[in-house]
Length: 78
Image 1 (cartoon, one colour):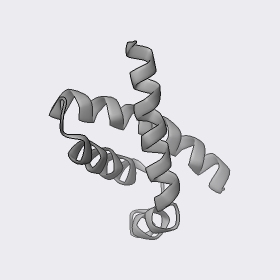
Image 2 (spheres, helix red, strand yellow):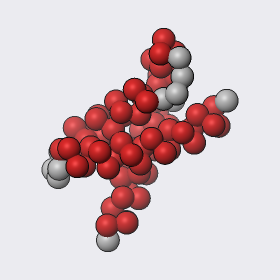
Image 3 (cartoon, rainbow, N blue to C red):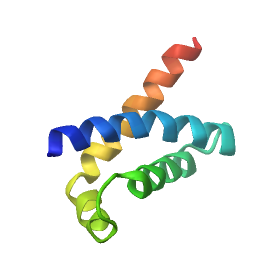
Image 4 (cartoon, rainbow, N blue to C red):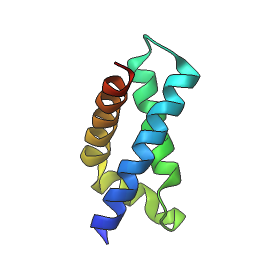
């Protein structure tokens, strides 16, 4: 179950980072990261009452995935 969920989170992170960048622009790193994490948690395909638990259990994974998505986006731009 967690493997499929982690793959979904990776895809959500890519979308979340792009949306945050378009919405907030440059020089707002922490705000963009917070926005991306919120987007991911809101869109995780699990039963709504379980979202806080899942986000807590996978918080460091979600954080790492957002960081990876940022680096991926930067490399695509260059």
